[in-house]
Length: 274
Image (cartoon, rainbow, N blue to C red; front, top):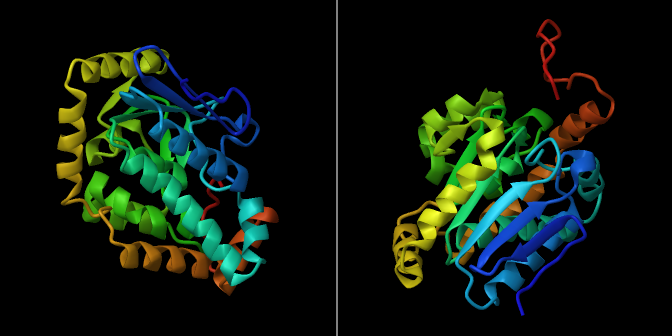
């Protein structure tokens, strides 16, 4: 029986061709991730790994936006928990992205609206990514005194270290044409044509030998920055968790909750959107 979930923070199903649809489903918070969404994404990837005849995975977001990064209210609550709990949360989040990244079948991400923080890591973990022309992106963690440690390898593979050094340090927003130029997505299409673009790419993938695709992906990943050994993976997880519990992160998250500028922001700096 093909796995499926029609309720909860992640919806998934597989069709008769073996194509899985994985839909992030917290539209009320722009699909920002929390512990429940991460657990559901891990469960989806685990279930799909056991599915017979799986050929491809299509990743989308429900509602107005693809994925708005972390739910910062939840992150602030996690921050106040024990170091062990913070490591557990960072590890689960890192594993969710890495399981998508290393899936033996091709993965296709369809991005519309906002794609911030961890959402950019999900896109980077997909083999093929297409953005609607209304999509807007930001590797935003530094704005809140956090780091994107656990998705930096996938982003480095997608856009290269040079572009990562700009966009992960500035936290600035950039549009669909820029995201195509730097390589995070492969195509930009009108928003009304996004699903059709995904269907076209899936059809092309299904014309190819599934074992050959799996072997090609495995070999390509040998040279990837995200081809991490256990020690390197653990180091990123620990760094990600530790930064969340620093005074700087506490101030950044407080500035978000209180809708004010963080203390490190110059008083004469222009206001920017959260």
